[in-house]
Length: 333
View 1 (tube, rainbow, N blue to C red):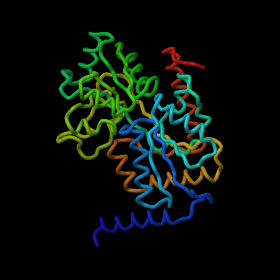
View 2 (view 1 turned 120 degrees about the vertical axis):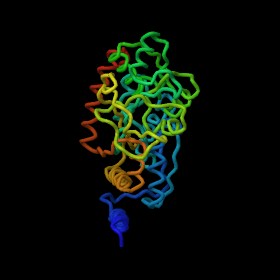
View 3 (view 1 turned 180 degrees about the vertical axis):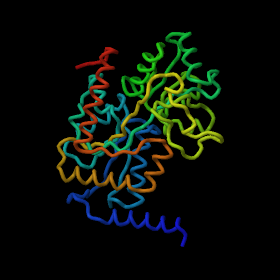
View 4 (view 1 turned 180 degrees about the horizontal axis):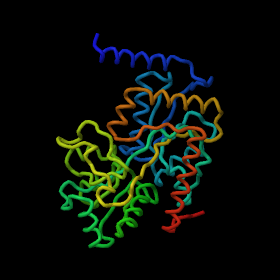
């Protein structure tokens, strides 16, 4: 038997043992589970929810059906408000990002992140600066020079308003001394369509949100907001993969790192054993080959923060975002 075959059998065996082991929680769902994506179809949040759903179904991690619904209205506030109104209901699992704690800082929404029960942060999404495939600027320097020549005329698209994409846009403005007009859309997927159609000049989508457009030749990334180049993997186009994209610092844009956590929540007032069931469920998902393939394909950073670690991360990010929001005059409290 080849080493590769033995490795496959061992991997499959390890997964079987993991899934067969009894979870720490005694509670089990007894009716269908609803996964709520706080963004429109096709975006990173929606893709995460559907990836987790497909893994759960494939490995029969619960004997209850799991359905994904999109509630992305109000820059995701619809989904979080829905969760708040579902207090005590362990059959609604909310998929989001850092907007769970960012939105209440900058918008008068009907929820706070403390109305929710955090399950885990499962991945960190990277960000890239994207332009149309046929754009005249082939580098970050050329893009910024063109933007500086027309203050306020360059349109930067992004998912949602006063959220992660707009925060990064304002950081670009400050670092490069340019003025951009930010235009919010419902999701990264919609933003990518707008760039392909020439309705905006650029966006800062995650790799996952513009993978198809780069492969299809409608847009291309100029740089990645990462301290090092993204990991090597299979080529996306005939000649390039994520690792071939220079970092933004390499390219002369001094923003060393910008990431967004992919987060999972329950409504408030659930029990400890209900929370434990979902923490255990997400850990099982993360230990599958399908999850590893998803992380590699979307060029995300695999992580798993729960409990005190997740709370610490949130508190630190809240302080960082609060400073930028204060500079922009966004704070509502």
